[in-house]
Structures are given as C-alpha cells and as structure tokens.
Amino acid sequence: MNNYSDNDIQVLEGLEAVRKRPGMYIGTTSEKGLHHLVWEIVDNAIDEALAGYCDDIEVIVGKENTITVKDDGRGMPTGINSKTGLSTIETIFTVLHAGGKFGGGGYKVSGGLHGVGASVVNALSTWLEVTVYREGKIFYQRFENGGHPVSELKEIGECDINRTGTTVKFKADPEIFTETTIYNYETLAKRLQELAFLNKGIRIMLLDEREEGRKNEFLYNGGIIEYVEMLNKNKTPIHDEIIYFEGTEDNIELEVALQYNDSYNANVYSFTNNINTYEGGTHEDGVKLALTRVINNYARNSKLLKEKDEALSGEDCREGLTMIISCKHPNPQFEGQTKTKLGNSEVRKIANDIFSKGFERFLMENPQDARNIIEKCMTASRARIAAKKAREATRRKGDLDVTNFFGKLADCKSKDASISEIFLVEGDSAGGSAIKGRDSMTQAILPLRGKILNVEKARLDRALSNEEIRTIITAFGTGIGEEFNLDKLRYNKIIIMTDADVDGSHIRVLLLTLFYRFFRPIVEAGHVYAAQPPLFAIRHGKTIKYVLDEKERDEYISTLSSNTKYEIARMKGLGEMNAEELNETTMDINKRILRQITVDDAMAADDIFNKLMGEEVEPRREFIEQNATYVENLDI
Ligand code: 0R9
Image (cartoon, rainbow, N blue to C red; front, top):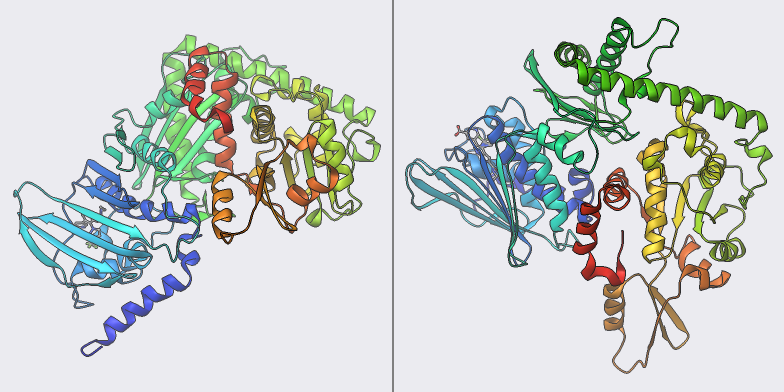
C-alpha cells in the first residue's frame, strides 16, 4: 500500500460498499441479480447505439459462465479524466456512479433501471477485462477480486483504423452470487430479443459456448411493428395491417404499434427507455385516453353507435388489442411500487396528441378496418353490460358474498388478511388431506374439483357462469371487473397447490391465466405463489429430508458421510399424501418452499396457453416437440 493516493482508497471503499450491500445496487443476488450484471453492460452498448454510433452488439456466454459483451461503437474514450487523474476507462469501471458524474458520454437518452453501470459489475466480479478498439489502436485493462486494477490502461496492439468498439468480459463472483452463477439462456434471449424489438435496426447476437450451436440473432428493421406481429402470431387479427405511429415533441420520442385480434383480451405493454413499465404511467395513460376518445368519436360520427347507446368504455376499446408503446425520454421519472411507472406529467399530453393524430387519420383512410374495430368494441360493450347485469343478479342472490358462502371453502378462523392464506388445491382427495393437515387459524383450503374455465376464450360474463371461478372470486373477496378492489383481498398469500405432473401444470396454467386476465393487480402486488411439493424423500436413520428435484437430491446425498446406508423414495402425488405428510412437506410455513409468481410468469403462462389451447395446431405441435425430451418432468 505504498503509493496509494486518497483517491484510490476512496475508490476501493466505494467498490467495497457495493460488495457489502449488493442488493442496494442490483436488487438481489439471486439468479435475477446475476442476469442484472449482463443488462448493465448491454445497456451501455445500447446507449452507444441509441446515440447513433453502433448497430452491432454481441453477447457471448462462455463455457465457464463468463459473459462477453461486444459493441461496434466509437470505443470508450482512452484519455485521462481530469477529476480522478485516472484514465476515463478506469474511472468508469472503478468509481461508483461515474457514468453520470463524469459525463457518461453525454447520451441524450439512457437505458437501465438502476443506471449504476460498469463499476458495480466490476465490483461484483472475480475478474473483468475491457478492450477498446479506437483510432487504429487496441487498449486493454484487467481488474481482479472485485474491481482492483491489475495494471493501468495499456495500449496492447494495433488494429485496422476502421475497426472501433468496446468489449467487456467478466466472471461473476460466486462469493456474492451464492445461489447460482449459471446463466439461463432463455432469460438472456428473451430480454435481448425485446431490446432488438425496441431498438429497430440494431443487430443483437447471443451465443452460448456451453452448448454447441446454440445461438440467436435478433434484428428487427420494423422494430415494435414486428413485436406486435410476434405477439399476435397465434391469434386471428381482425385487420391486416399493423397500425404504427411515431412522433417527437420536446425531445420526447413516442412510438406505438397495435393490431386488434378476435380474442377478448388486451395485451398492452409499455416501455420507457427500454424498461418495461409494468405499472404503466403517463405515456400509457395518454395513449389509452386518446384511443378511447378517437374510437367513440368515430363510432358516433359514423352513426355505428346510436345516440341512445352508452359510450364505449376504455376496456371495451381495448378488447382484443395487442399494443406496444415505447417512449424515449431524456429524463424519465420512475414511480410506483416497483419503480416501473412513468411519472413525467408532460408525457401524457404528448402521447395523447401523437396517438390521436395518427389514429384518427388511420380510421379515416381505412374505413373497412375502422368498421371492424368499432364493431368489435361495441360487441365488447354489450357483453360488459350483460356481465354487469349477471353480476348484479348473482349479487342479489348473494352468490358472491362471503357471508352467504357455504361452498367448498374451508376458511381459516383468522379475519386478519395479513396473516391469512388460501390454498387452491387440485382434487378432492388432496383437498381433504390439506384440510386435516392445515393450521386452521391462518390457512384456508379451497379444493378445486371441476375444470377451471379457460378464460383465454371467455368474456367476463361467461367466466362468471363457471362455478369454480365464482367460488374463487367469492373466496378472494375482491370482486371482479369494474368493482375489483385489492384492499378487500381476504388473504395475503394465494397458494396454488397442484401435482408436479402434466395435469397439475395444466391446472396451474389455467389458474395463472385466470389471475393474469382478471386479477392482475393481485399478481403484481406479489400475492400469488406456487407450492412446491417435493419430488424425493431421503431417509437415513430417523431423519427424513424432502428435496425438490434431482439436483437437490444429489447435493444432499453428497453431504452424507460415505457409510450412511440411505433410502430414496420418489414422492407420491398430493392426493396420495396423508394430512401429516402434506403438512410436513408442502404447507408448514417453517418447512415448505413457495415460489412467488411474477407478472412475467403469468405472461409466460399466457403465451404457453395460446400455444396449447389456441386454435392453431402448428404452435401446439411445435411446443410439444420442443419439450418432448423433458417429458418426464414436463412443466408447462
Ligand atoms: C460492451 C459494452 N459497451 C460499453 O460499455 C460502452 C461504453 C461506451 C462509451 C462510448 C462508446 N462506446 C461505448 N461502449 C463513448 C464514446 C465517446 C463518447 N461517449 C461515449 C467518444 O468517443 O467520444 N462510453 C460510455 C461512457 C463513456 N464512454 C465515458 F464516460 F467514458 F465517456
């Protein structure tokens, strides 16, 4: 430590702080946090692309789960930073928040949710290397043990003067990412594809050196138009052309692509600076308001909607709508529970204006498409009014009222929602065991006997005529549709308990689809879980250890001393467990394992559902073929 300056010490303290509290910088050190490292570096390459200097990005997963990200931008500047006395590159990789503080390349629009960038990735890596190609020279620097430079930035060779770009390669530190340092190809592919859709014309390659031949190239010159096309792939559109508008006002860019299909569901996704704004915000509000207003005006002016008819509601106008809204903002303010709601108030009007102008014109110029869309909205409106009447009728009968509810629900004694939970259990026999094995103070059991209606293919009025669904709604206490109120939810945890087989997965997908379609705020607020019944029981001596899968089984066995003579039993289905076993393995809050269901899971369920349940045969066959090798534990 002889010639360390104050500056160096400060720098190392900064990186040490990241290692001490990684959660503060990347949210979590689970698998999600691990992937976050990739997004931080990819976001930097995307920033360079958005500035117009880069159109080719490559992400390579190495054999040892290293990550390499390459871009063909200008190359990071290689000079000295006057504030730190270090090279700009060393500054960016070792000083916390240097991206913002030291100019950050002066990008107009910048992606990334946390924006903490390169130094955080460096701090959380066993080693990291950066290589820059610029002005015919190659520069290189390596860091080890959580961000300590091994040497300073060095010129290590020459390259073609036309070759420019930045390459960052790193290995996540297993001491930080204790759960896993193995990247999930699907996770990487899904997000990189999304980035390619959201940033038209940028080619993004993903290459997996862990498995020969596994790679994807994402390049969409049509951008979000192609995104809508993909989302509607297994659906039946009611007009041919995908409608698209873009506009810029006060440096705020807005793009919208949409197409109606003949289903009853809305799939509206919005983004700001490439971040999925799950909770919506002003860009989404502006567009939705404009859509409803323009449709109502057109419907009235064209006399399709009569004077006596009530106005079409926002939901009526979004039935069967697939829409992507993408906003690029120089200074986005993110709000909401998960910081995924755009708060900038000026965006509402801008989005409203851009959308109104474009959509009015589209309807004028395409009268047949306009007619199809308006008629679809009007049918939705009639169904909504019918559903309201059906709801009122059931309410009069007291059907949806818990106080009159003598259904199959074995409710818990507690009326305190914050400690109460409900298990939705597959089948009467598992239901019976669960009722015997539960803690009746806090655990309610609802056995599901009949088939859950596939709400993908049903409007609310039909859903309400399905007994299983009515029972679920009544038990939850929240109401549904326009009356939905999250505050009235009677349980803090809703736990889906199904077998680990194809039938169980099917029921789970049906329930997730129901929640995603009709109770999305419950999913968004994190109330939905899947119970994880164990697959194996390992007995040795008086001990029984339950494990979830083969991997855990093998790990556990390897911890036993070599002379333990153990026994492995494959667990039976839920229905075959007695009350005690069920409690022990799946319900006891101190022993069980629950998986929280996220909106992404629900979205994936929706997609799988379309493939499995939709009318198109081809995607179903494709899906089954692709998953045939996993059929033993098919988890769909
Ligand atoms: C592989 C991941 N890519 C990057 O991390 C990356 C950062 C980066 C960049 C610039 C160009 N390409 C990049 N790739 C850049 C260059 C110039 C100006 N601004 C940005 C220039 O040539 O003048 N930088 C991002 C931040 C910085 N550079 C800076 F702060 F160091 F300037």
